[in-house]
Length: 112
Image (cartoon, rainbow, N blue to C red):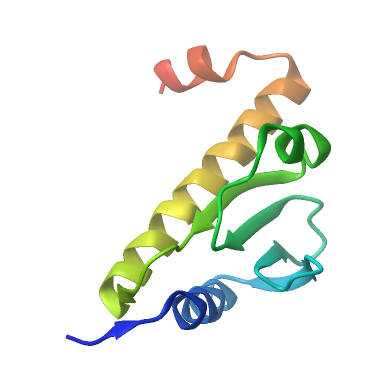
């Protein structure tokens, strides 16, 4: 099975996320990070070739999840990374909703 270089893997991930209703709403100046959102949502899913720094995390709390590709990946690996990022994003949405309602996200999850 052939592998995709990191930039192509990120483009493939963006295409897969588009199938879940995400679209690119911003990119950083270097072009190595994309920020995606679902229509009308203030929350972001980040695609990049590097992890965020603590300063970036504090400065951009709207980013609920990141998908990072640093090395070549197969199509199947990219699909698995996208599924994991979607789970992380959904968890972030639950966490935000719990904080807004004053419910502890950990205790909310344990009641399910």
